Length: 107
Image 1 (cartoon, rainbow, N blue to C red):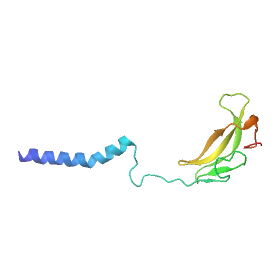
Image 2: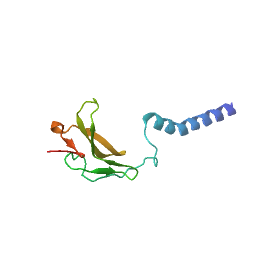
Image 3: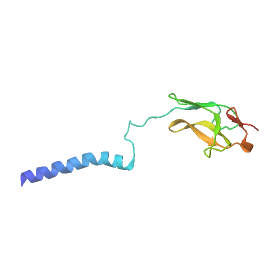
Image 4: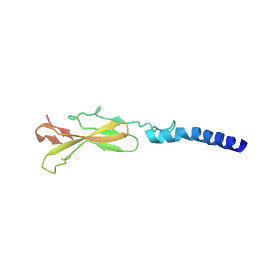
């Protein structure tokens, strides 16, 4: 009887100790000290479609540029370099009158 009680207490303690790890994995929450804070700098102040710029996060640098749209048609789109919580990345912007040139929308 004493052994059963000791085993039950040990199992209970083990479950309590592990429950925090399982809930963190299930909810997607990071444990303290594991979140990487990203510092990022955007030379044109963010999503500025009329000024050429770059976004740099200390690991990679992204530059504003004009490219083809996803449809593959002759539509040019602006790939605007911006800072996100994850670091430097691109947002796609359709310039008025298909006016993307040299990484900016022409006015």
